[in-house]
Image (cartoon, rainbow, N blue to C red):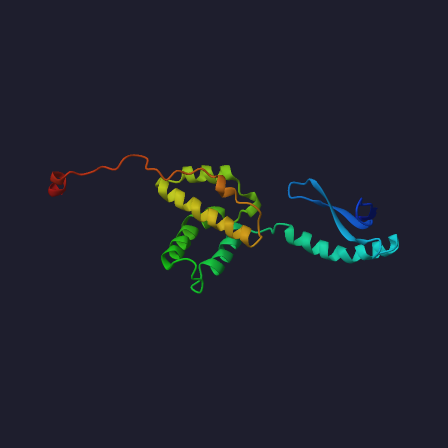
Length: 190
């Protein structure tokens, strides 16, 4: 089955069919067996004709498999694509202030740290550890995490990558300590 095979399959209630079988490699390396009906025995009378019909399917299947393979893309390239598609002035899906804030988080935090990493190299634990090591407020870390999640959702939507590793990143936006509340007398002294 290296290049696929053609089989005649019997059916109980209908006439026999010709089936093309092949296998594909999944992203995790496991083999997935596929099959596609070529036609019935009435439509295609012999094995040689069925093989010719199967050869016509191969380019279509190869194109589909090439599209399903993830693209090797860095975070910097993804950020650039995201800015062109989602953060441009022509796109009215997000407000002007949201676009501005997203650009700031990308430029200030995400691109300097992750720009050279490929999408497939990003690990949940690495991002979580990095966010915890930043000397900023938890709420800011949560916003950075959310922008990274939006970025990976964009990659999934455009089929650059499958899955969003950021969705599993744990990041609290809760304050580390309660705020100091001044009384009216303390405010007068200031």
